[in-house]
Image 1 (cartoon, rainbow, N blue to C red):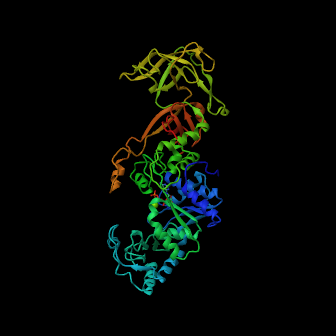
Image 2: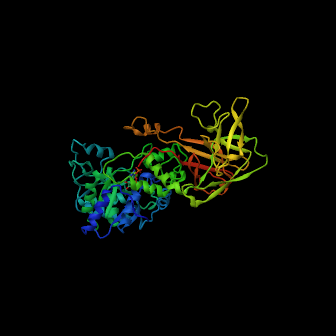
Image 3: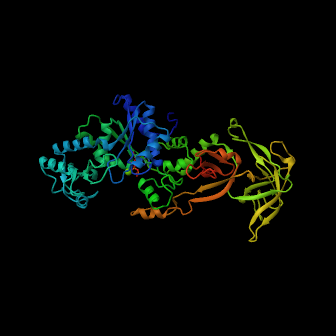
Length: 555
Ligand code: ATP
Ligand code: MG
């Protein structure tokens, strides 16, 4: 794996350099800790790149750890998808762990806290606990069960484990300070009852540790040195440290927070993405319009581009929104030299070249990639019948329209000049065919200088063309609506773009017959496309547009 080559700032990297220099650590251990409650998205990619590349740079280790402490939302399907996505992004984990494998140790640590008088079983309901917690301006109130004896707490906690109580009947809480200015320190719940089957531990447990208690222990158990998370956990850090301190863990991990990645026109929360899937706004987690790793992979983004993007967005403490065009920029940069050039007609219009010999097919030379001449040339057929793009013809063009119109001459890319002589229409007046003439003198590559034309258009030879479906995408989420406020669920779904997918039936060059799923091409003038791995059949290629060619984005 290549090291980060970015100059973008990364304050966590500086902390690691200091920690190694001062001898605080001999080696570093990071982790990527997804909850398997959905598919990974581009925001997770940022965390993956950060954790794996920091460890790699300093010869440390990175674990993939499933933070699977909530049986109600987690599933094996997500575990498998997450593993696949991390590998696809180009990373190999050192250890593969499940937080649920530590349930016994976590239970013991909870017992230790009880014995130290630092945890108690509470009978208040969830609503009451919330009420007692106080607010930012008012201190909380102590629960009437707060002063139970150690013996009683040990007994009740064991009975919780044994399944003697119903969901919500009791919880275990840390005993800290109900008047702490940090609400997270007002006796947070550390265990709850959930009679549910867990994807890993089955029915072994009916009590589950809360994230805030479990996470520091997971880090400590694995010897993680730098536990990197996003900013919304900053207020949790005191409790993280409290757990490490009071549970007497051997290893002392430390939490560092950075600003999460936000992208324009993108929702980035597994919960919201799941809603888009469940409500049928998209065709699944891997719909190419989704910001999931599986979605952008299917769309045709490359791991190289995603990694470069993640590095370049830097690591900081201040939240911002990154323009999606920056991600697209890295995709173009990566594909520029790799993707073969080809021609495809998305919305075909038949053209008959009346003075071209009937029955003749000639093979023309075309460069596979002018920006990477080593890729060589391809042969493309040309004959009397071709398809051009409907948009490349106008019967009554405005000024400065340089493409085809009656009486005008254009260059066919890699071929000849053609001139529009006649327009054929159906009964309703729709243009269904053009009759053109060509000039044999103007063949591409022969150095013809007799006259110039202002427009060059693309085409495919009609009798050999392969049918193809093109899928063109617009942003799934529209940003220009009002900010979602409280009760955001509804307004977020209101922002879904009803026109995010356009499907067109067209044609591509016959040499595309060997194209395989995930092969990527640059279609002349249309942009980069990926062969869809799910929808392509042996009779029809389906192409997802990865990104158009034009960009106003400057790095
Ligand atoms: P979501 O709300 O989408 O489920 P999460 O943070 O709850 O996100 P986890 O599965 O807990 O998802 O995330 C695993 C790791 O990925 C965490 O360390 C988290 O901080 C990080 N992460 C998630 N979203 C982003 C993001 N947008 N930018 C950077 N890191 C992120
Ligand atoms: Mg989460």
